Image 1 (cartoon, rainbow, N blue to C red):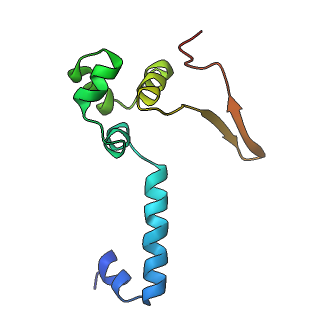
Image 2 (cartoon, rainbow, N blue to C red):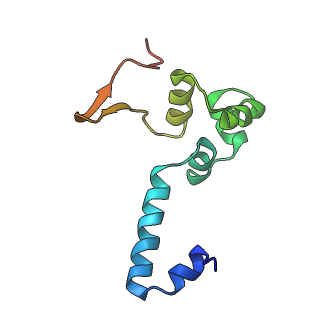
Length: 106
């Protein structure tokens, strides 16, 4: 018999169930799409388009793309008040921060 995730969670002790939900929320907050990020910042596509001085349709297209130029992504994030960082991770060393990519001032 198949057991759904909700059924499995409901069978756990309350404290464990809460810990799992808290961790799921934390992980979800770390991995957002551009659309989810914009919504989390309480911005509409129209508002963000106005801030970037582009059309709303361009925002809609950007949010659907899986391949963006870093300069486009940087301007999107900076328009919402954030700062874009690029980090490379390797199995045999700690994370390395990369600089000079997509910088609009270059």
